[in-house]
Image: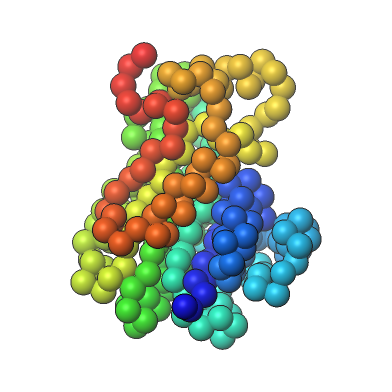
Length: 245
């Protein structure tokens, strides 16, 4: 059986690192992307620097980076089976507090980062008989929370939640499954570690707990193995989007 090849953007830390590490543990080839080569090399050391791990640094918001990413992945491993578009930033402020830099950052990393990599993935996977495109978005884009003013993430991540549906329809005839995973609060370096902050974060879901990166990894691997799930947005949020509690 041919070994799967998985591209993970934002792979140097947090959820992306966990996805890349688990993929390696499953025997997959992994192509890891992040902006900083140094951060990628440190992440690779933590993963044991295996031979089936390819590091491709670069700003995924740039179309040239996506081209290089897929070209190097194909040259090294051949067919690419999965793109996990994980690179993202989350900027939470009241609307009056956002500035132009915040807007450009959210659009660059979250929107352009998905679009250019998904564009290359669609081209490659259509030529090779199928594959999986998985976007990591945000549960708050599905159900805003008055305690978390976050108009920019809601706009951009919410757009991605709908974009996967449109792309799933567009690529269905090519055997390409397109889905999103919308995490709630996950314990990653993005969040402060002091106890007061963690206690507040736990209260943002009816289960009164914070998720772990492994919770998102399990959802990703379910979609990687699925043959009949496409156009879906899977929440991994402790029930935060289920309704009012």
